[in-house]
Image 1 (cartoon, rainbow, N blue to C red):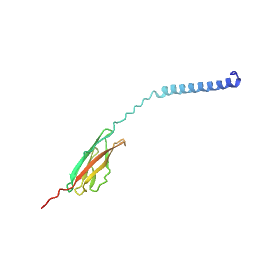
Image 2 (cartoon, rainbow, N blue to C red):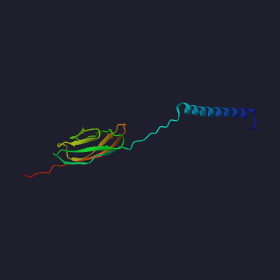
Image 3 (cartoon, rainbow, N blue to C red):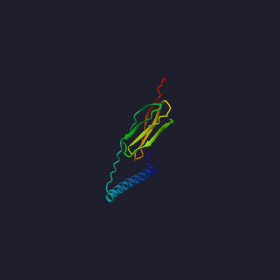
Length: 141
């Protein structure tokens, strides 16, 4: 039943192909080692970027600011802010810190902005920045 010449021939063809493939892979690996030597590549992943963004609290009519910083990643950071409120400005200081300025005319309210830090390896991280602008106290004269 299993002794048909076609089946034996088919087994022989597959066995031959497998043997040739194994010999070829072995020979190629052996030759590669002879001519180029072993090559070991280590990839070290830098730690995640951590952003320090202190909350800002001020009163309408009074300017305020905070310095944002980053650690981790590959140093050489650039910063950005999603300034969605009028009166919030972002000014670049240097490659490690950024200063967020809240103008004295910014309207009272509680705002949540997003700070972005991108390192020199082009990896980014995001952090929340809370800005609270209180109403100016009323003075009675």
